[in-house]
Every structure is written in C-alpha cells, then in structure tokens.
Image (cartoon, rainbow, N blue to C red; front, side, top):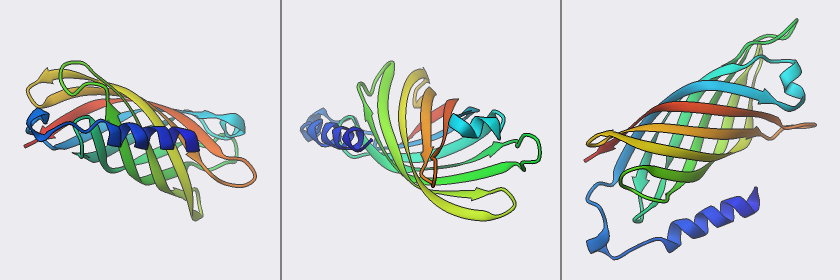
Length: 172
C-alpha cells in the first residue's frame, strides 16, 4: 500500500507540462453509486451493501488531480448483527492517463471512516481506485470505477470492493 501511494505521488508530480499545454479547466465534481462487496471474514456478518459517493478534484498538473471525497455506505447485517453505516471523508489523488476522450485513471484516497452499528467509532483507512471516464457531452463524463476500501482495525481489517458508476462534471 505504501509503495502504491509513493508511486501515485511520483506520477502526479512528474506529469506537469508547460502552461501553454494545459487545458483551460481546473475543477471536477463527481457523483457515483453502486454495490459494495464485503471481503474477508466480515462477509459472514454483512451482506452486499450500497454506496453513494461524491467528490471534488482540482487539476494540479496536466494529468494529476488532488481533492476530497466522501460518501455514505450501508451494509445489512446477517443474523443478530445490526446494519453497518459508514461515512468516509478522504483526501484524494488521481492520475488520468488522458484528459480528453476516453480517460482511464488510477488514484487513491486516505482518511477517516465514521462507522455506526449501534455504537459509533472512527477508524482510519485507505482506498486504491481504478476507473474510466467516457465523454457523454461537453463537460460531462460517465465515470466507472472500482474501489478497494480498507478500514484499519484490530484484529482484522474490514475490507470491501465497490463497483461504482456515475457522472463527472467539469466546472469552468
């Protein structure tokens, strides 16, 4: 995980081009939703969940972005286990391999997860992410992505894979 974050940071800062090669837009807003598949031992306690996410990215270099991401994720408990509600609030990095046409990207998020299932607690976590943006109209893209959420806790991390789709908007 540490190597992935270092590699993403290196790609982010190496990709800067002179100002004349920069596109004119700098801001993106996105909204996603999709099923979340619990992995590991927690899959015995929780059913497949649903997530609604949103975020903002600032284009800091030609293809590198920094931003914030947040959402609401809910998992139904199985048996005597209650539902689990998760609210992530993260700092995010993203590297687009292209910023026009079809746009594959990789990214990562880190920050707190606010968990509630009868009692409330806050845990730290990380999220590697891969995605693809497909242009629909000028300034509007279809955003498809897969996120691997890792919530660090003892004795075992709570992990789940989100398959998300939604829209990304370029804000002038």
